[in-house]
Length: 177
Image (cartoon, rainbow, N blue to C red; front, side, top):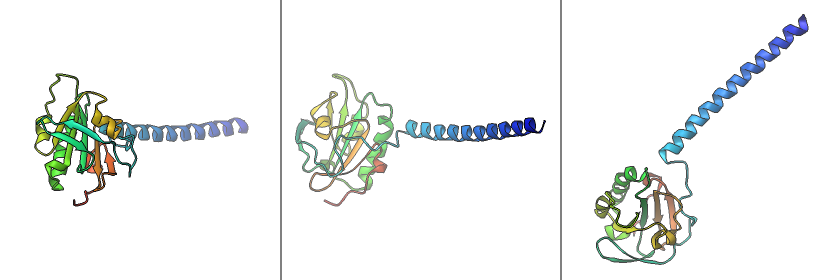
């Protein structure tokens, strides 16, 4: 009888331990789900690493300006019309540019959209950036090796990548030109 009582106690303790571990796993899964839903937690938004220089590019902005780079660009932002997080990041990006007093000529905003597709936030971006609308796999996305959207890239005065992120708030403070 004593062996049976001991066995029941051991099984009970093991069940309580299993229950505690299960609650811990559920809590971590909820945190992870919230992190994924917020679009945070990822820092790999470009195929290029920190310190790398994006490839040379030439593009035409929505205002008809011919843009070349990466020389002269301090911050590049990449949005997609099919991205659910992109519309929420546009106001944050605009605030970041204004708060850091970055000149419009030094800001590049690229919107990936299907041909003839309207992009409602392109006009908002035009206030603080030179805006280019390109199809998926366009020259600008290829030059920066964009992996996911939205993607933000802060460049130093030499054109090398200094900071990247899915949210402008993740970027470092720009160095004065």
